[in-house]
Image (cartoon, rainbow, N blue to C red; front, top):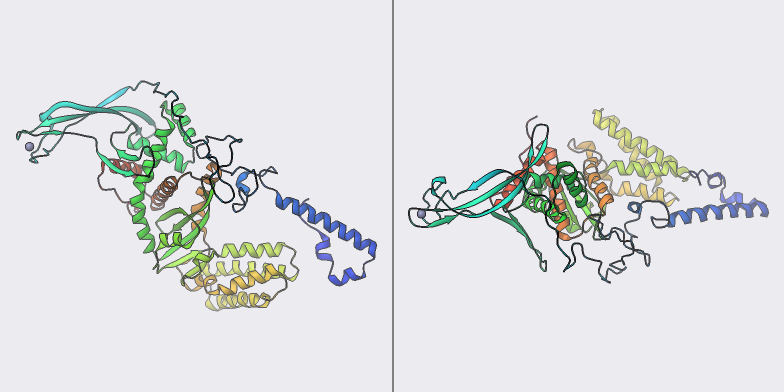
Amino acid sequence: MPRLSIPELTQYERADLSVLPRKELEDLAWRFREIARTLANRLGEDSTTSSRPPSNDDPFRRGQRDGKPLAGQGQDDGEGQDATAPAAKDKAGKDKTPAKPPGKRPGMPGHWRRQPIVVSREIEHVPMVCEACQAALGVEHKGRHVSAHHVFELDRGDMGLQVTAARHSYFAASCACGHETVARPGVGLCSQIEGRKRDLHLSERCLVGPMLAIFIAALALRFRLSRLKVREFLLDWLGLELGVATINRCIHEFGRASEPVVEELIEEVRAAEVVHLDETPWYQQGTLLWLWVAVTANTVVYRIGSRCKENLVALIGHAFLGWMVTDGYMAYRDHPRRQRCLAHLIRKGLALAEGYYGPGSAFGRDLVRDLRRLIERVRDGDNDAAIRRLVARIKWNCQCNEHEIEQKVRALAREILNDWEAVIAFVAEPLLSPTNNDAERALRHAVIARRISFGTRTDEGSRFYAAGLSVIDTCRKRGVDPWTYGRDLIAAARKGSSLPGIPARLAA
Ligand SMILES: [Zn+2]
């Protein structure tokens, strides 16, 4: 069926039907039955019964059908796309037979590096201070060779990228006091999860140097490549062979190092004058969660969690005093200083204007025209009287339609009246923008990533993903190079030294 232009829908009033001859009435009823059947069929279609992509499926109805595998089951890395694998969770979320875990089966032969490491630099570490008496040591005190490891590092030249390998050697040094001090690679942050075979410990004893690690994190987080694609990219374009686990480790190291920085960013969000908030569905191992975002003038913070209010509180705290710009979602409703996103209301008005709502369509058209005009007039700083008249007309228009017969028309008019202060807050408050575009734009990137990867797999992965994106986007918003900053952040987190904060906006 083409775009529904069905004359029958607008042509007949109830009174007309009573005078129609029986034969015509029957024909009419049959035509309506065909329309209803086509629409009902189309409404029931999803990615399993039509050529629509799975990303189009209703997030609330995912996996409801019996025997239908949960979309996004273990596809984070493009692995395990075995269509015959049984769904791991049924409707109630109870575990059935668990899906095959990722990685090597126990007892299978291992893989080894096929590439020899060609070392181009030797870096020696000699203790500088005696552990016992704090006397100065140095190269002249270099004693026995204690340990060594290789580090691949990415040299980021003016117009080129090159991977080089360095050999880090650690030495002992003897002091005049008789104590022998041994130099060791630094050990920093860690991430522990109960029951996991091996926890993530950030350490300088690592095959991948900080610049290469942040490059890998950039490919995954900013350029949305799966772990397997990152491996392919490194091998094909830089001639570097790394395993998926090493690549995953780099991405997680950046996420772990970002977490303390995000704590500080959250404090900045809570002190902001205006914060834009939004949320979008997110999947964690097929379970529906929400990705929240809070955007201020120079900070972006993401958070993955449920849709309940505690996640909102985690972002902006209990005592947020500034202005919020939001959509109509209930969790935001009880905040007193709030601007409702007018783009959402305009879209709803357009739906009325273009639908079959009789006089309600005229309400939709007027509403869209008046809201757009209001946004323009406030932006251009027109005189107050004209703006006041326009505001009064919008309110009057809604009051005229709040008892309209059509449910959708009534609902929109009431929605605007119930939230009236938040709809027109931007008229009096020059700080506010009338739409929530800042937050929606911030979510776009993650929405595309979700469509490619079907979300994250674990709590830890979700936390690290949100933290990493927060740091990258905040850097971009402040005009700071995220990758230089990220390199320093990873280096500090591995060493165990204090983490650098994201500099405030650089002067243009
Ligand atoms: Zn000493």
